[in-house]
Image (cartoon, rainbow, N blue to C red):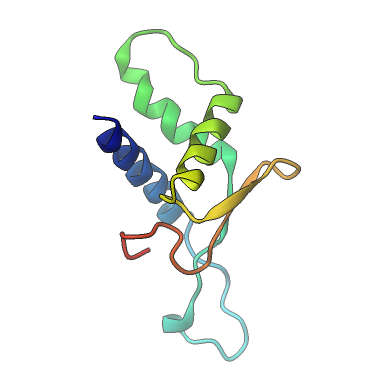
Length: 104
């Protein structure tokens, strides 16, 4: 049960990462060489998590610290590759293999 919860959360966070788009093309770079944005604001992850819990009707509010904790646990368990920059309120993802086992 716990493993399926972790995988479901990882998939939601992965979709937020994918929705972030790509960095601008640099000179001499082709479309196939384009790189995904590696910095994602924590607020984007928080918005997705709040949308996911909005339909429960429990009235619970998801605090920013809880979102950071969920992200930190995903990184610790190896489901995400990157680190949390609290100074900038960003998650800095690995440019290649940000979500191991998913092809992203």
